[in-house]
Image (cartoon, rainbow, N blue to C red; front, side, top):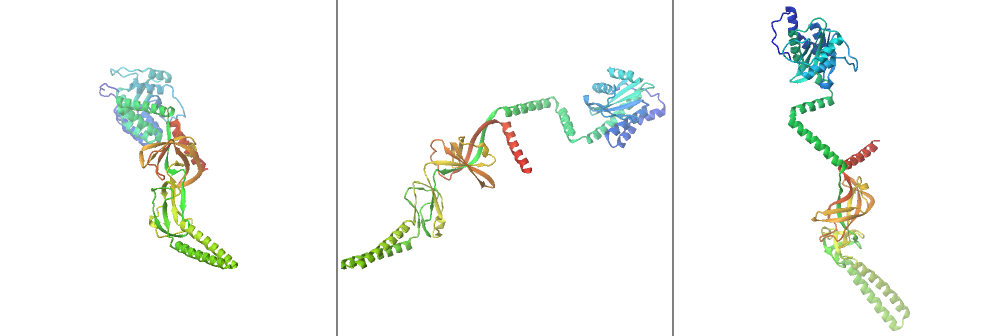
Length: 469
């Protein structure tokens, strides 16, 4: 900026008054307009009229983005128009961050004025001056004035600098209000970058470099890929024990989780009526056998044959009653464990024939049932390795191998799940019981993390777009 002490003005009083009111009138011209281009054009016109300039151009922007956006006397700027030499002169003043006047006013400062002198020769003017428009040390634009008659005086230079300082905050606010969303984000990032300083910028650079390295590793380095699913233990064989006859539940000897041996009585139905039937059929059979002996002794063949047939009928009924009496006991078919059927609260209640009472599984030959979500079932194939950790045995993970995918979905908690059968690799640890539950991890093909995320996002997007259309 101009640093010399200005001697008392030799300008006429009217011109002195115009210079003194330049800042105020320029602010009025800027505030009267509704948008930034019109405000810059009004500012250029006001300066041109006050200082008797041939042309005044107002540029706005930083660095290489500085462009002329307002001309005096109503001149219009076409799209992409470039004013030869004007923007170069503005850049010359902005780079040096000080006012440049040609012919210069002696103030003891050294300035580069090549672009300004080239502009003078090109336009054939006598004087050119460019004043940077700055706010809090940040250069926002520049004002270039061209005069055909007379040089610029020190008083005019000071008046221009004061005017530029006065209108800078208003122009900055108006410009920021006209920015779009993305432009505001870029502005905020640029201002934060400037405020951070060298140490802060270095930290941002290190962070950005680390993020780039992390993304590159996520896109290249393959990582283990596991599918977490719910798991439960089942026996390779399970036997459902039902009520053999209609009756009443009299006694229950076991509960779920109890170990049983083959032939052990697990439950007993009420058999009082059947025992009475057995005793009645036994008495009837004895009676017919005695009648047969008497008739045979007396030689009454007809009576003997009739008694023999009645005895056979009574014997058949007796055998049927005895079989029904034997079926009132629910017997374990093999050594195993009871996995379902808590009948302790049903003692004395009626049961119907074929009603499920207990479920027994053997103590050997386990299998794991894995519930896989339908959106992930395509990733599972027979032969894949897996591991399971049961809730009851949290310190003993077991290796598995996928054996079969059941082609039937079922609804679990509002989601469709497929049952995948897996078998332990080797002998399972002690303490395994059918009905135990836990979490299994199915080993899938290794993939880079970024590729996996993109695949999942693409799969979800295809599903959404298909459902929309």
